[in-house]
Image (cartoon, rainbow over all chains, first blue to last red; front, top):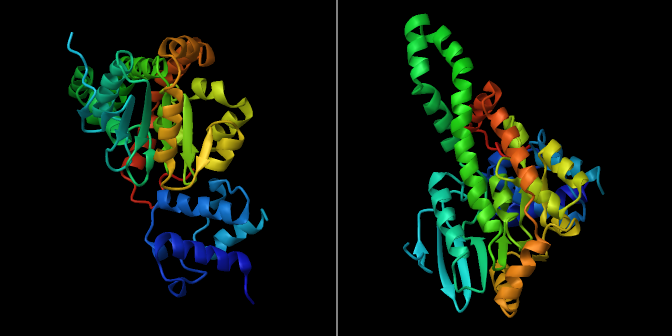
Length: 78
Length: 295
């Protein structure tokens, strides 16, 4: 079953970091899958906030490693 | 006295004049970390701002990652270690008590010396920052990406701030066992409510540009890549007013919180010699974690 939050997140990540969306899997470690560091991850947080109209305090993402984890954090706020 | 040139190309920042506007560009890799080289050049800028024909100034970064990631923590760490290493007291104590006991004893005895040296450094930063803060011409900050710690404190010296949508502000200092030391909290309290300050300080979280606009920290939020163009329009508008009137009005609108700044310096210098700080700095400097900046 499709998860609209997760799908949107994968699209945002793909667009922001120039990785083909088909190469991203929900359970990938985002830092590995996107080859990014923490400062670049903040860019994704900004995109997420804009796309979902929510504020995501980044400490909630401290233990989130995968796209699924991040989608769950966003889900609590929409 | 030699006049400071209206054109300058340095290691950490450069500037030149466009019509009556002084444009100052931060360009040190990776993200304009503030160490002694940057401080020397900021000192030079501070002097120029008080003796210039420019009618306004724009401060921005051309580094992709952002405006400024804060103090150069590697330099701070190396400096603290070096001060401890080169301490004559430490050498003497090592001779008497052996390396381990000598080092432990030296840390106790040497703390006031390190604290005094850090105090001199902090006094200098505060002097330079306050000179920029009190420049008689409008200073327009254009920020994007990372605006953390000392970078946030640098931005707070600006009179009007234009933020690109990508901007994120944070005071992550508590992670290091410190409070911001370059005047951050006293100056932030001029602009936003104390609840916002506590949220930033006590959680170490980042704040996006939109929220920063909502709480009154920045004047405008603009799309990525458009900030400099908009900042130039703001600067051109501020430059239309009589410079003497601006110079008289600015200190009234933007008072320097001197007593709070002194208290911050005392607190910072008291905290910086705690072994927890050195350990946290060591962890940060040697980290190969992909997420050292996250709170």
